Image (cartoon, rainbow, N blue to C red; front, side, top):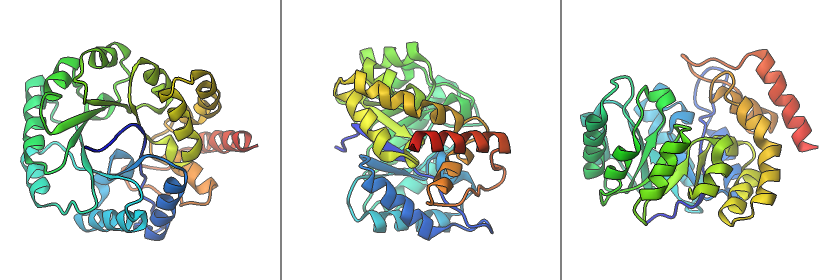
Length: 292
């Protein structure tokens, strides 16, 4: 069983100016996160712009991260979508060497009802040779996975966790109150993470930690250890940037900070576009103040 306590990072995919994947920058980002003492890496999630990548690019991205990681920390593969049969077939044929679990997003665009969501995830979990992490993100999928649905799915022997990005405290508390003892609940909202840890969440899969992994993961460890006074200091110091990186689209915001740190360029693939100049200016000013 993979240990999901602490900070996982939803890794960005760096691009060159011509739009091709920047594999040297991806290696640099991987080293940055490992030395920043995060607990695990999530490759090919939403933040990785997975929907715009070819199968060949995805495979090379996995291979690049796994090689650079060298088994230092667990790696989780993002494999999800709205075509259930295609996902299950991918899971059956995918090379999972070096990968510890699968993060699978709730089906988007189709807007399934709760019965459809349950059936989808049951098929995914049945097909996956690795443990599955549910991912509820209504702002991107157009449908919410209710607490009732999550708790029913948590009974499946191959579903071990939930990344909850609904921002719904009542829903999250219902899951935390009734979850099985061995079921992890992870924050999908950076700015809410410390508050969710106080309610019993086990960690986070973070976007912000791409840029400041050491400080963000230390905040999470403080929260998990019950040291909320010290954790709040780190939380409030990072909070302006945690909010601003989403002000004009993600991962455009976090890539501005990564360029500021010398890790990768800011390029994103259409239909995404770079953040506007106002957001860029605010982010860079926040970073300069934070780093003083």
